[in-house]
Length: 253
Image (tube, rainbow, N blue to C red; front, top):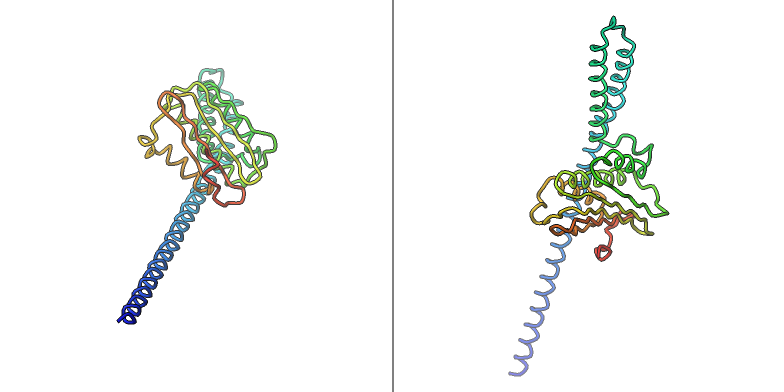
C-alpha cells in the first residue's frame, strides 16, 4: 500500500514538474515573440521616420537651392529693372520678392535643417535661438567634450528642441527656456526646461507636439522622462545611447 502511494506521489510530482516546464517554455516563447514584435515595431517606426526625413530633405533642398536661388536672381533683376521713374511699383515688387524669399527659406527650414550637417549641430541650434530671441529668452549650455553625432541623431535632436520650443511659445507663459547638453562615455544627456505654466502629461500626451517629440526619441533608441506640474514649468530629460543600445532608466532619476 505504501509502495503504491509513493509511486502515485512520484508520478504526480513528475506530472507537476512536466507541467511547470511546459508552462515555463510557453511563457518564454511568448516573451521571445513579444520582444521580436516590439523590435519589429521599433524598426518600422525608425524606417518610417527615416523615409519622412529623406522626403523632407528632398523637398527642403529643392526649395532652398532651386526656388530660393531663382527668387534671389529674380530679386536682383527687379532691383536693376528700369521702371521709368515709377519707384512705387519697383518698391512694392521688391518688397513682395523679399517676402517670398523669406517664406521659401522658412518653409525649407521647417521641412528639414538643410545646413545642419555643414554648419554643425551646436551652431545650428544657436541660429534657431537667435531667430526666436524676440519671442523668448533661450539659454544653451553645451558642456566641454561634446562630440559630433550621427547626422540622423543630430537632426532628431534638433527637431525635438525645435518642437519643444514651439510648444512652449504657443501654449506656455514661459519667459525663459534652458537647454543643457552633456556627453558621457556611454551616452549623451539632453535636458530642456522652461519656467512656464507647466502641464498635466495625462491631458496633453495625445497631442501632436508630445507625440512627435516622443516618436523622435524612440527613433534614437533613447529613453526620456517628463517632469512638469502646473505653474512650475516643464522639463524633458533625454538619455541618448552612443552604441544604440537602450540606456538604463535609472539614469533619468
